[in-house]
Structure formats: C-alpha cells, structure tokens
Length: 232
Image (cartoon, rainbow, N blue to C red):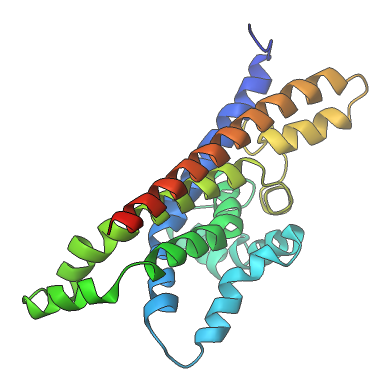
C-alpha cells in the first residue's frame, strides 16, 4: 500500500533523513570526546561544561536557533569568516539545518555514550596499561569496543530526535521547500494551508513511523549493551 506522497512531500522526507544523518555525523566524534572528558576526567569547570552540553535540552529550541543565527549568520563572528574566506554560508541552507539539528541532539549522544563509558570496568584499562598499551591503544582496543553499544544507541536516538527537530531549524535555516523544509516544517506548512489536513496526516504518519523505528532500534541496541556488559 502506498502512502500517496507527492514529489514535494517525498522531498521533505528525503531532506529529513539527510539532515538527521548529517547531524549525527557532525556531532558523533565530538560527543564521544566530551563524554569521555566528563566521565573520566576531573578538572576545573567540569560542572560548567556539563551544564553547557545539556543546555539545549532545557532552553527553547528557538533560543538555540537564534544563538546559531548570531554566531553562524553571515554577519556573525564565525559565519562571516566562513562566508568571506571559504564562501561557505550555513544560514538558510541544508547544512545549516543539519548544524541546528546537531546542536539539539548533541546532549542525547553525550548522555548515552557517557552511560556506556561509565559501565566499562576501569580495571580492564589498567590491565592493558600494565601490558604496555598506551593511552590511544587502550582507548581503541579496550574502551571503545566496550562502550560501542552506547555510542550506537546514542547515534540512533539522536537520529530519531533529529527527524523531529523544528524550532532550531526553522529559526536558523528557515522553511525553504527543497532546501530546509524537513518533515516537521512540511507538516507545519500543511496545517497553515487551507485543505492541507490530508497532507499533514500523511506526513505525520511518515514521521511517526520513522521516529518509532529509530526508538525501537535504540532500545534494541541498549538491551544488547546490557547483555554484553553482563557477560563481561
């Protein structure tokens, strides 16, 4: 059975998948690094860093989008440099939508990775150190494999959350069909259009299906993580 989506509606679906995927790719490695710092290192300002990392979870997404606009807009301190030196413009682009989504989903990856990292027995790393393994060897051969289920669960959760990001995207990247109009923005546009209820319903069903699939995958990965840790 087909959903009967129009080419423009399929474009919104494709953009949502692209933006969510790019956001995870952008934020995954930094999130692993930040999670490792928060879980394994004690330093001045650690609590402040922890609060800053989780700030997107508690402030309105529109505020995050406005902050990105001030920093990465064509007149912002970073946006102006990118535009003048490299000809890169993030505001009102697909890349900008991915950046806004990455910022919003970043805390989800950090939390999941940190949880997985805290379950890793430090004794295993200590044993590897006594056998002559250096810091990078210990991380890539012992720590990372053991925490990888948490990394995967965080990535999948962030991807599912990215599919539904609205406030930060519309504020920083606007609602441009074919460029930044993801599923949530397309649903919003449909609800503002006379007779658009059927379109909104079709897109909402697609959004619900994608989000549920992502959450189920994240739960399966989390359960696998517990099994692996239990065996360890």
